[in-house]
Structures are given as C-alpha cells and as structure tokens.
Length: 342
Ligand code: DAH
Image 1: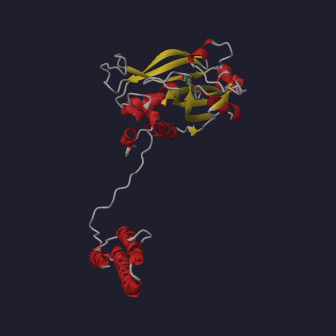
Image 2: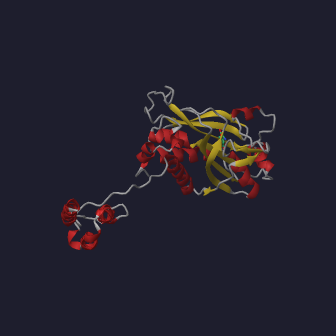
Image 3: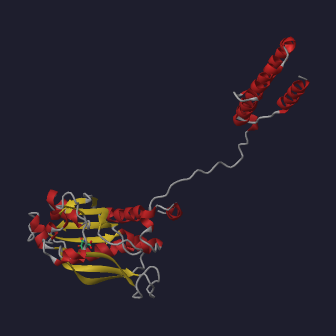
C-alpha cells in the first residue's frame, strides 16, 4: 500500500511538470496517463490487492489522482490551442516555405517553340490520330504496298487488327488534312510517332515530329527554302548556317534534307555532327503531284511544300541532351533542369 502511494506521488510530480507545445505533445500525455493502457488505469488495477477495510480510503485517493491527471490534460490542451493561435508568437519576417513547382518537359518546350514560329507565319495548328490505317500512313503518301521505302520505317501493327498501325511519321496528318480541306492549306502538325527500333541512347521506339504542309497556287521551292531558313534563324539564332542536300522521299519531288551548322561544336567537328560540322534536322520537298491527286486536288493548279522534323534532335541541339532515353524515363533530376526555360 505504501509503495503504491509513493508511486502515485511520483506520477503526480511527473504530471505537474509535463509540458506540451503542440497537439502531438498533448496526445502523448493522454496516451501515457489516460489511455486504455495508461498509468491511471494501471494504478486503478492495484485496488484488487488492497485489504477490504482500506478500500474506501484508497478508492478516494485513486479518484483524486484520476481527476488530477484529467485536469492537467485539459490545461495542456487549452494551452496548446492558444499557442497555435497566439498571433504574438508568429514571426512574419521568417522566409516562407518553398513548395516544389513543376517544369515543362523539354520536348514540350521545343515543340511549342517550333509551333509558335510557324504560327507567326500563318500556319494553323492541326493534329491527327496516333493509331492509323495503312492508307493514311503509307498509301496516300505515295508508298504503295510493295514500295521499298516502307522498309525505311519499321512499323508496329496492331495485333488484333493488322490493318491498323501506329503511325511511323506525322506525314499521315498531311493525308488527314488534304482529305478534309481544300487549298489554300497551311498547317503545322506536332505529334508522337512509333517505329520498331531497339531502344538505345540514339534510337527509341517512339519519338516526336513536327510536320508542315503548305498548298496554294504558285507555291515554289523558293518559298520552301525561305520559310525553313526563317525557322532556323528564329529557333537557333541569326548566325546559324543552313544547307540543303538533294534527297528522296516518296511523297515529295524534288526532295531535300536540311542541315544546320552544328551548335555543339560551332562547326569545328564533334561526335554529335560526326565531325562534319553539320547536323541534319529535317526532310522536305515539293508535295508529289500524285499525293495531291490522291485527294482530288488539281496538281496543275496547286503546288505545295512539306517538311517533317524530329523534336528530339532539335532538343538535343538546344539543350545538349545526349541520350534519347532521358526523355521518357521521368527522372526528376533531368526534368527539373528545365525549370524556367522558355
Ligand atoms: N516523313 C519523313 C520521315 O519521317 C519526314 C519528311 C520528309 C516529312 C519530307 C515531309 C517531307 O513532309 O516532305 O522521315
């Protein structure tokens, strides 16, 4: 009995000196003293040991102890609430907590820049589906079934229905536009494309392109060159050099690929430009008369030019990204470097 009374006195001392600055501290007090396995319950359990004639007196002591603990609990509670709302304790001069802000994906940044340059020239934004049929991706673009140029782009077919495929280039959007619009046509079409390639630093099974199409009366190769020249100057700066090389695409005739002077080494030669000083950034050409006729556009009256460029390649040159896989790994250490970029 004496031992229990001494224990109660010790607990009272602990209760009196218990401090709590916040709700968590108050809760810790409640659990220690008033919880279902708390000290008050434990001490109450001692009642069983007490001889009958002393039970009444001991019961009184226990009730007082319980009330003592409860009173302290309430006091701590109201003190902590007051603490939380006491304006005089707030220091408004402390710096605020920074909260994390996202950044645009580098490919979105570059795509938006490309699109906005062409919008300034009067091109309208257009998009098409990523799942296409053979006609829009190949046939209409002058790539009939046995055309060897189909091998240039390894295609993913939809297994349930092999007449569907994942578009291999945004040139399919050209077909969609010509099918639904009559000239004059002036569109810029960004989008994702897919090719059956082994993933490495230099190749990926999906990437992004921007397609351009301009059809009207009297559109010439000079218009094509001047438009793309303007684009390069806006995108990469006035000092960037440009060269056109004759090339082949089934949907354009004549066709040309465009190189710019390497932005990484300034033309001196590096691994990105394979020591040539030049980097290819797009394919282009005058829309093949057959493509126009596929959509009932009179190729004697109308001419047009088209071009297609890879967004990843331009991003690589602008931001020096050296591995294509970085674009889709979603590593915050990579992505957060583009905070504040235009
Ligand atoms: N579709 C071509 C490719 O993916 C790029 C291209 C070349 C698009 C010439 C065009 C063009 O519109 O005229 O490699």
